[in-house]
Length: 452
Image (tube, rainbow, N blue to C red; front, top):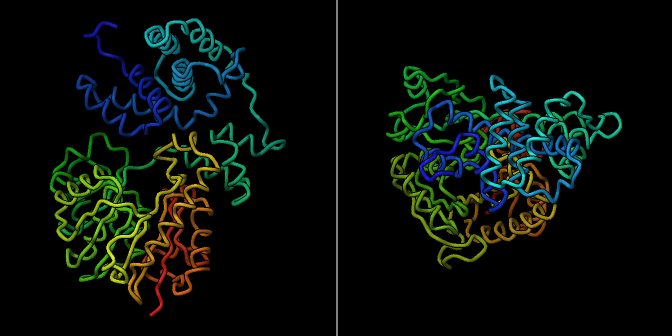
């Protein structure tokens, strides 16, 4: 390709997917970087790249099944560049409209000629086979093998489907997998340090956005099919809003912070929940935000400046390790938003399902137990310890809490009562949200109280 030649949207989509596979990267930052660098792309092109990247990742299991039906060789040994060119081509043939089939095939062949010329004949043959035989593809039957049927037709790894069927049953698992494959809404948290939800909704409506209130969070807004970027609005520039899934917004409500309290956010990340806590405290009190990543803490501080948050101190550190001795028993409330498998966020991060394993879930659970035990040291008597994850796996959720309570006898699990909507609180008093039941990401939260 000539150095001055700009790559087409479909070629950029293949490039992004190749990097996701080759480097274990996440699609969202790669997509943002590619869109930022390629200023020539119009809104249609940007939408097409986004659709192809996320659609291909969501439906990858089904796409690979189709390739396996029509390709005579060994799929597992196929070069990743050929795989992703085929996946994007088949995705477009089956799931997009208004793009002629011949154009999809021709461009896929041109892409593979550039990135891996030896694969051109294979790509051409398989895609033309899909056009001829797409109605003849045989899928596993639900009656004979429900796990495999759901795994292939709804594009989730078999081990995960089998696990969920054991938890939820067949019908609920199919519904969950379908929900994971839906495009998630753009969800915002209104920054009540600067404005109100109703005022922000009205402003965005005037700006041409289709907006509705969130069902469970009293601070949230949902944008329906936004035709332009919310980042370009005055609301965003002035710190009136931040991106945050509705379920994530409920964690700060579970913490229930009060003005004047001393709070520790032990796995703060880029500070989405930290900022919400500060708003609920009306910028009165103190929040110490700890994270192992200096880069994430810099993003947290930048976000805080935009939102007008003034009560946060940051500290670079490992949540598994002890902090200052003087902090033992000093915090009113501690939030542990623990590192986890992320299997509750597959709507937003579909690549996670293709790189996760049962062993990863176990590793996460072991890490979570260490962090939670460490956090317990710093809660004052009568104070609260809040544990949260963005996964729906019981090994990382209920079982972590049960084990913690069993050996930390001075803590007890508390029902959140009126702090969050009862529809997302289970019988045991845990906050639990699910994509197919609540239209949110899958989150878990437990409220623990240290005995006086």
